[in-house]
Each structure stands twice: as C-alpha cells, then as structure tokens.
Image 1 (cartoon, rainbow, N blue to C red):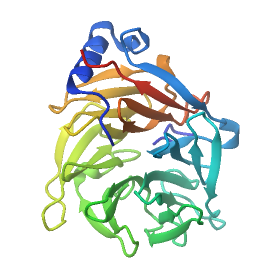
Image 2 (cartoon, one colour):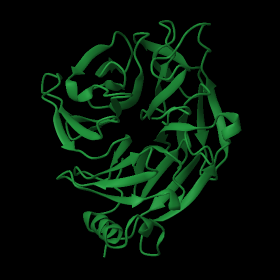
Image 3 (cartoon, rainbow, N blue to C red):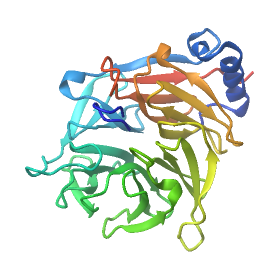
Length: 325
C-alpha cells in the first residue's frame, strides 16, 4: 500500500503453465507480459479516480464479481463482471483532529469474504472509536467487531476459516493481530523484527496458506512465513523471498507455495517460486498502475491497481495465463 502523497483460492493454472509464463518473461524481459505468448490481460473496470475509487484490496464473489476497499474514500464497493461499480457501505468519518499513523488520512485496508457472504475489512483512522476490524453482512450495515489501537495501521487481512480467526498485518506496529471471526478482543499473535518498518511501512499483505500466515514487508521487500502451531500460536518467522522492495499483496497460484506478488512502486507483478526466486510477469505495459492486491480463481488472476503515484487509471485487471502444454 502506498499513499497518494508518498506512493502506496483456487488454482491459477498447473505448475507447467507457470513455468511457461516464467520462461517467457525471462527470455523476453518484462515487456514480454504484453506479447502473444504471455498472459492475456483485460480490463474488468476503469475506475473513477476523481470519485476516490482507488482500490486497496480485493476479495472475489462466487458470481465473478469482486469486492474492494477504496483506500481513502472510506468505501466498500462491488465491481460486477461487466465493470459496473456499486458502493456497499461508506464508513463513518473520523473525529476532527484524528490523524492516521503514517498516512494522515483515514485508510481502508484488507478485505476478505466468508462463505456466508459476510465481508470483513480493516479501517484505520488514528482514533480509538473507529480503528479496527469491521464486518458487513449481506443486506446489512457495516459495524466494528474488534477495536485496534489508535496508533496502529491495520493493513492486510486474512481469513482462516478452519480455525475461525482473522489475521491482520499492522504496518506501523510490526504486529500480526488475531481476532475471532465473531469479533472480540484482538491478540498480538506475532511480533518480530522481520515485521517492522524500516522507513515507511512494514508488515503489509497477508494470506493464510498451508498451515501458516504468509506476510509481506513493504520496506524490506520480503515474503515471510509464520507457522500456525497446533496450539494456534505463532511459530518462528521464516524469510521465504527477498529483493521485492515495495511489495504489497500476494496470492497463491495453487496448493503449493508458488505465489504472485504485487510490487506497488515498480508497477509489476512477480511470480515468486518456492525457492524464493522471482520473475516479473506483468508490467505497466499490461495496464498496471501501482498494483495493490491480487486474487486468484481458476485460471484467472485479478489485479487491482490504486494508481497512487501514477495518478492516471486506477483499475481492475483480469489475467488469464497460458494453458499448460
């Protein structure tokens, strides 16, 4: 995630198809992402920057739609498969004088969807009355279900539906918070130097995958793996990839540990392999405008761009990767 001022699950394809994609990008360079043998990117929606439609995070609906947080307009919205945008909720404005840590203005971060259609999302305002985890049931109104400290910046959000918990990556306090799906008192689930910022923002994106929380660190350019022990506590932090400074969100491509990473400032998406090596597979030539988040369903990856520094075209892309040969 980058500010306007400073810069802010299902299987994609088989392993073979991912290898084809990586080989194409390596052979022809980043611009290969726009070539005929590279993934085919299409615009699902061009969003209205003047109306505050800068998507920060994304979760998918069963009908092919996408639910997004608009980072600085305090809105949750649904983007239909045909690109139409419908605002689902507008969160309360913070009290006068409230200043959001690191960003100054109110910030909507991660969003996830439960099987019953409930949306969970994170709101940071610099005030104790609003900052925290919120939920929105279908046809209902948004409400806060867990308070987080006013000096926190909850950013990425992940749902562990098996364990019944939500995990929030805090970009300022260098913490992963854990909250029951039903709401309640958050716990500081993980704290470690690897989660800390080194200038602007630390822990950023987060996903639950194969018994662990996977967390990005924007400043340090790392992908971290934190095992969830049988007691539910956090295991030792493992660094799984480096060299991805300004990394925002990630999405796994299948049951293995290969993932896609949105690198915000570089206008790129990288394919990160199990061994930590990575290759650029999408660039600004494909339509990326400060990519903030990713979601994967079937053979399609969805990439949201906030255009925080390009200030040109916040959008949602759908990318279909080559079929396995």
